[in-house]
Length: 239
Image 1 (cartoon, rainbow, N blue to C red):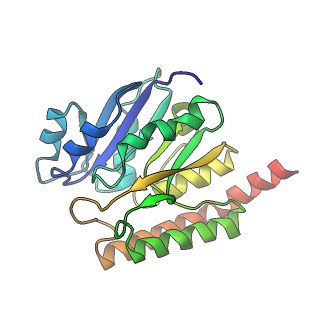
Image 2 (image 1 turned 180 degrees about the vertical axis):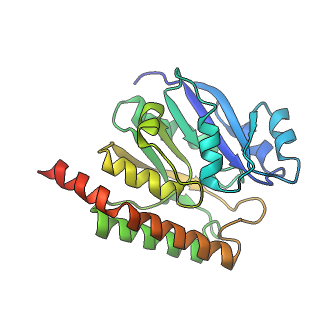
């Protein structure tokens, strides 16, 4: 198992109450830099992040994917792995070593932290989020022939593989696009169990009916858009 140089990207919009806790809990062994992407916050998210040692960059266009793409711009050639982590304190940063282990042992290119396989505290995943997650994973199994348990936001990917994916989605479809394009490029994908807890503050997606519907439509649409590409790639691999 080799040592890795890691950059952690945290998309954050109005997470002043939680971002300091998240940053303090990140294990720093091998972590070159933690980048907080201020995605148009109207609170003190950026100031708190700087006080807790993060590099802060700004992305004014609202959108999870837009924030992640802005964070990727802060990575360097010497970075082996890019980790994406939510800023609302729902993920456990202490699970980072488990997320990195399959990459360090050269068993995976992309590792997804599965809240379903891990331990999610009661109420951390509301029913609408569980339903949407299960529906998306079922569609990916039926259409792509690939089995996932979660679209969890806590994930790690080799930087060179991430750049090869050519990620474009700037909204809620980011995680699905990453998994679909990883399948199309025949990357080695692993899921590892991670813990999950109730977030601090209200979710911008699952916290409202409108947000849930918008995210669901985008995610399902992304799955359908990548269906031909993934199926062609899977047929080539199996032939």
